[in-house]
Image (cartoon, one colour):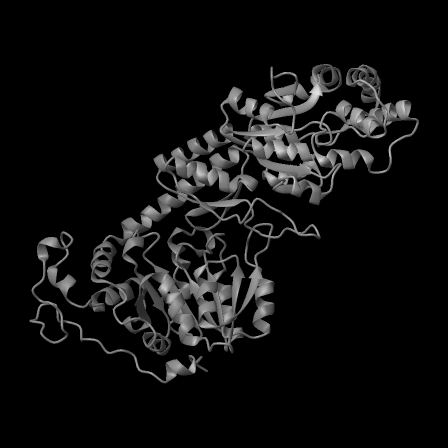
Length: 584
């Protein structure tokens, strides 16, 4: 049983334009200006092709011959996106019909469905490889839908649905109209390449519930001329003509396509070369230890984590455009710890010429070198609860007679301005009415701390975190510790993993956190233009923002709310979550 369009479409007739074959006649019938301007028209394009309404017969016949279908089974559209728009507005009864799409998918699909008034059922892709969730789609089909729309290869994932699966769905779900957008099909390799490439397209002419879209925007390099086709049963295309604009494809597109079709083997060979160049680009990126989703199109998805936006902007400032598909800096997961967005941290890159791909790699490497990853030490990389915190507790007890209340030290640090632990101890004593010189606190606390630190301090970070991060970006520590407090405890273990460790008083005249002085000094000394500071305190977050750095917090000593209020853009439970944040 044929799938009928919405009632409004059934009630109107298609626009009947002039008949084909008018271009060499004296045209006084359709109000065209026959005193044209041939000297101003594109070179080589016959003047009458510009001044007359476009004719599609020759192009449709040529396409029918190439694809092995009848001319009646082809409808021209203004790019495949117009085809999607026309299909949805032809078949969807507003407020009544539902449609199934994958998520993420080509944005025009849900947009067109939403404008047409459909109830949209989104089936998320599988997180591991961004492939279609075929079982999830079938479960949605079991519940019934007027339309099911998928791109294969998909945009932006490059995922495909096997031809046999599509045709099986058409038979099992005869009341659903399947719309398959094959915009990237010429680039596909593997099971959908070669002789199998046109199977679904040809079968769409026989099945009453299948439409296939192709475009000249991708492999045919005609994106600016806007030419697409819809292939399907003649009756279905007749319904679409009632909604489609009568002359939606211009004559320049028709003329160019006719010329290019004469060189179709060259176009197809070029598509294979593009795919091979993409494979080489993927290999280079993986050599650099980037995570890459390599689908069946001329595009790849590159995981840059929280730097997706920064890297995109850096490349654009140097004249190279990629597309950021990541929604935000964070969070990566929801409150249950589940990953929220399969495109988080990803940018889409399509393969260009070898020279363009080489330039992309050069700029990506340059961005990585210019982006510094700076760490606080205490409470971020190192657990100091049994050293610094224990020392403060002991100093306060010795001088006031009582230890700390449950949240006394945390509350003080949350105020900001007490990043130095000995200053914090001095302030806690002052608030208890105990007068003691700061220098005396320092003299008493330091040897006590060093003894406790050697026995109790331990690292928060996994052994592979810093080596992996260093392969991507230059690493630094900016700590409120002095050299005598850092070197004997962590110097030999951490110095080899970092470009440099900045301790308190290492920068003459530099003010401690929350002032940004030390972070700005890193940028100056190493000519880094951007970066991130990872810390666990209010002062860390304030210093990062004042230095123009991204601020990432770890909730080892303070609450998420406190850290966000201080300026944290992303809050982690553990410093090891940076592997996800940076996609390393």
